[in-house]
Image (spheres, rainbow, N blue to C red):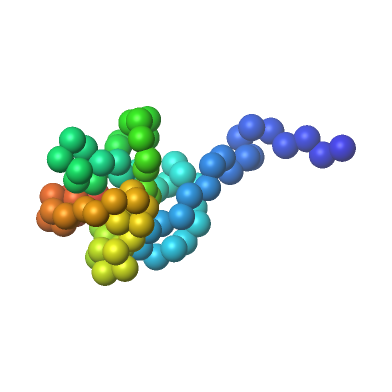
Length: 90
């Protein structure tokens, strides 16, 4: 029987809204909606509610073009792209 140590397990896998690439959750930026219904970066990846994931600022434009945020959060969203792009760079 093959026993896999915990260090070798990839953990949860999520899909980037922009490029559609599947990666381990820890490598992606998690976004959640704030009280103004704007996506904000959840650095600790522990905020309550539905989350959406991006590889980085490069995938943000593709996600906006595909209207992926509206589908991921299941509601209409008016994005402030500049704020979100800056948060993803840090």
